[in-house]
Length: 113
Length: 114
Image 1 (spheres, each protein chain N blue to C red):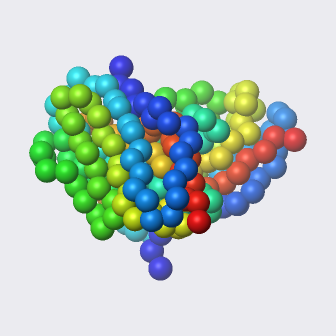
Image 2 (cartoon, helix red, strand yellow):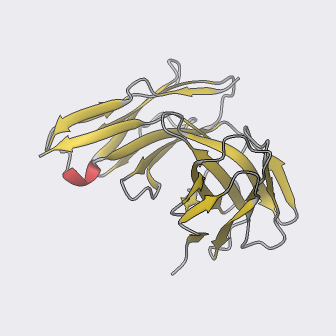
Image 3 (cartoon, chains in turn purple, green):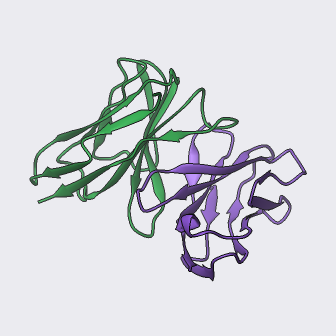
């Protein structure tokens, strides 16, 4: 079975600090796609960053970067210089080669002014 | 503007009634998806469709039905067989599956059984 685990239900950090959200998964597939989605209070899901499992280089999008450890099956999201607008639920999600997304349970992140 | 439109935003249903949630996209995407979101459980896949006139069950399809008669439309019917239908429902689409492309989401429908 393919599973996705986010072990941090809630986190909070001060504005301008760096925060890392954890995500682990289990799959027997060798090629798959990994995503982090953000859901702000408006509940609109927004793609934050995407990583292909066959690429060794970690993806980066401005203040957002990932630490992808394929052997450990870990896919964490780092947010640098956090801003109030980063307050949201964050979900890691995977396409394990079956063209549908499997989501984790989410981490509620609060940025404190 | 291109995007995905879900309607209505809020929906109330009496027990024993069927209700249909609308999802329309003008992105010319082939694939469309329905997810259910409950507190503490993330998003769970109900049904998905990769092409017109074809769809597959997701992880929690029982008590739901869908149709895909047009590329741009993927309505979800919550039937009276769904024992706990109160939830937030999200529709998504992507060009050709989700592997190497971004999935775009609608703004959701909050369904409440009264």
